Length: 274
Image (tube, rainbow, N blue to C red; front, side, top):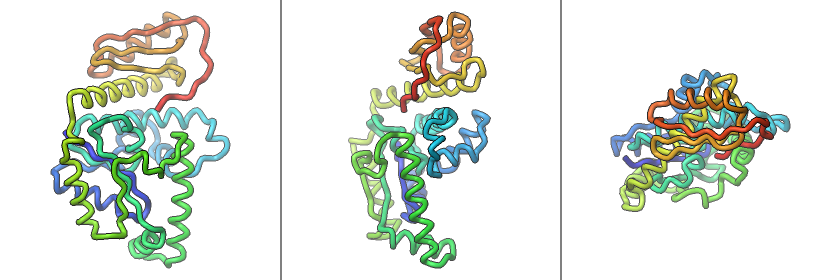
């Protein structure tokens, strides 16, 4: 039930490495499927979710409510795959979303700009100068987007257990490094780490479900799960709101009981926790 989550720069070969690791271990490889799953399950246009992660935010979007809603849907999709284990997830900010999950091997795959540009030029049959400009632009926009979402420098090595420079060696040899690393005792799931991930996944599924109901569509409510018990925390809009929220939460598989705090006064808007 091990889990490998990879953040890869354009042209770093991270996708190919992830696929090779999955093949060696007999794991499922997840990449674009995360976006498709989120779009299907929560009826969100796929291009909206891609825009969330892959483009530089505008000044208006930095305060845009839809951005935070889509992030919840993205989280829910990532956690749904992660909780099943024996999975390699590439990109989609997965290493940051899975911070605190002890058995998740979080990996950053990078390479010098010149190396990455040369690979993109070859793969896309582009002039080298055009490929370099494309990689630079993607780096800038991706960094700005993730910094806006997570309020941290996502390229910092402190967010990862392992950083690989794909300039050295072959992609196959680098995949062997990950295979050997994930087999270490440090990255084996324990009952405690599995429970943490399961609780996180269940809470996020509930939160996403609430956001899909027009009457419950507020980001001010935080959701916490402990086993099959779900707690809706923060002020909500009175007993009727609480009854509908409880009913909605119980439609999520795995939810047994729901405890919902109520208040008559609407809360101020607060950014969601990630």
